[in-house]
Amino acid sequence: MDKTIIKRNGSIVPFDKLKIAKAIEKAFLSVDNAIDQEAVEYGDRIANNIEENWKPGLTVENVQDMVETQLMSGHRKDVAQAYIRYRYEHALAREKYSELIDAVQEKLEASNVQNQNANLDEHSFGGRMGEMGSAVATTYALDYIMSPKAKYNHQNNRIYTHDLNSYAVGMSNCLTLPLDDLFANGFNTRQTDIRAPKSVSTAFQLLAVTFQTQSLCQFGGVASGHIDWTMVPYVRMSFYKHYKDGIKYIDTFASIPEFDINRSIEDNVYKRHSKAYQYALDMTTKEVHQSVEGAYHNLKKLGRLNSNVKNLAA
Image (cartoon, rainbow, N blue to C red; front, top):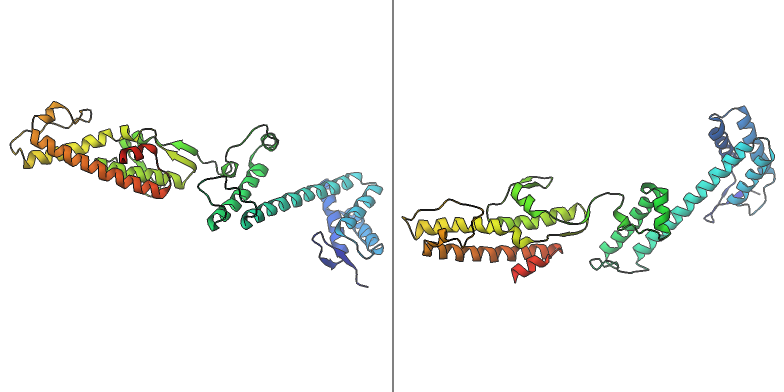
């Protein structure tokens, strides 16, 4: 009768005593930092003994139990302990792997849909793939990134680690963009440098760019606290451009005041030329409405619509 052994997954494979001898030699190696003649003889002796005592229905766990027993009966108790420790660590690894595969399967099959994120349909293709990736990233963060203390506290509900599935990446999460500084000084999208805007229409275009760019390189929400106030300097820039056009075509011989970013468009220095002023006011109002509408649609497509933009669009 051919000697066989039953693996953990239920499959039946030929009995291979060489694997037993090699496992024992590895235990010696972990203790002595070498595989000498004693290690080889130990491995061969125990492997031969187990082969002689083979019987139908023998499992991998049965074989490992027999190896432990024979190692413990010998004089190399330290090697026996190394073998037991190795077996235990691998059992933990198999258990963790099994848990991970179960979690992945649950997400891919959408067998326990909870739709915890209102922006994500866990039944959809993208939702299933995203949730599967989330399960893997969460396991990776717990097992390889977090300290044992932090992991224990999280798993035992002593602390709650927000967005654990993004913990390993280390990127920012849920932030308010400093639009005043970004627009005043320009910024870099990693593909190109963006210069400071010189009109309200350009500023609103860049508003969409900043939201889109940041959303692609972080997890969580992107917001702005005061888009209306942020846009004030660029409204003034657009107004001044239209005012100069008004002077050029309406009040041809009128003098044009120097531009001052701190000057309100309602300043009397502009109102001295009423026709040019009204023209600039009308054109600026039109430009603002068109710019806000464009930003509204761009951000709506992105799914990141700030309430301030809604109010401006209204």
